[in-house]
Structure formats: C-alpha cells, structure tokens
Length: 180
Ligand code: NI
Image (cartoon, rainbow, N blue to C red; front, side, top):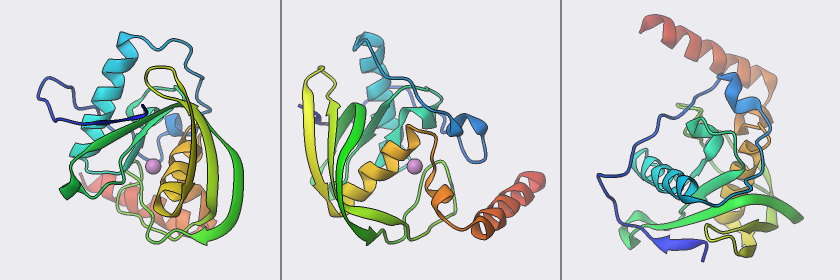
C-alpha cells in the first residue's frame, strides 16, 4: 500500500521547508536502502508538514533530507487525507505533452508558472513497506509526480521557466529578505 488514511496528530513534528535559492535543493539525492523506524517517522513528519503548508506534494530534499523519497496527496481536502509515499521513484515511460496550469512549489514561495510536462507517465518505486509499486499517472497526478521526482535530481520547477523570469523572481526574493 503506497497510500493510507491519514489522521493529524500533535505528536508528529512539523519540519522546516528549505526554500529557493538554497543550494541544498540543487543536489542529486541518494537512494534509500533501509526502510526502518527512522524513515517511518520522517514519512509521518513529511505528511504532517505537507498538510499544514498546505501542499499536495513534498520531497524529502525540501525538508533537508537528501534521500530519494516523496509524499503526495491530490485528493480534495474535503474527502479527507490519503497520504501516498514513494521511495526511490523513477519515471520509466512518458507519453504526450501537457501544460501544467499555475504550477507552484512549497520551496519556491510566491511564484507560479505553466510548465511543459508529459501527459502520461509510468512510475516505478517502492512503498513504505518496501513493496514494489507501478503507477500509471495522467493529469494532475502525472504533473505532481513529475514535479516531485524532479526534486530528487535537484531540479526545481522554476528551472523550467525562462532565465529572465527566474532572475526576476530571484531579485524579488532578495529584496524581500533585505526588508525583513
Ligand atoms: Ni516542489
């Protein structure tokens, strides 16, 4: 099972989200070799952090852990939370092209853009119990998974926009930091 019903708990730690232009986000992450208690605690903390933000996807690198793992939940919040976990995911097939509409990222606050993505993808990964998973995704799920799997190789969605747009955003954030 790569997804489970999720209940919010105060016992779970809220993690700090690393934001652009922090160089930490630019690195290639390492595959996970041991699915142990420490990893389960990290998964729960990432779920909690994603729901609190709120966001629909979060990669471990975004909370300062350079491991190949991500969580996501694209269900409308009124339907409850269903946390999905993918460990060591990779995209093994792609088909078609779509434009994501108004894509955003918890690590790139106050920036939205339409990004060219594959329309359909096939993802292989393991779940939090170590069972192999194959996920055929299209639409929003395909976009979210491409966005999160990009994070695992140090790519941010802002890296897919023009250099000019990226520079404008970097300048805006630098200005903001100075004012704080
Ligand atoms: Ni992101």
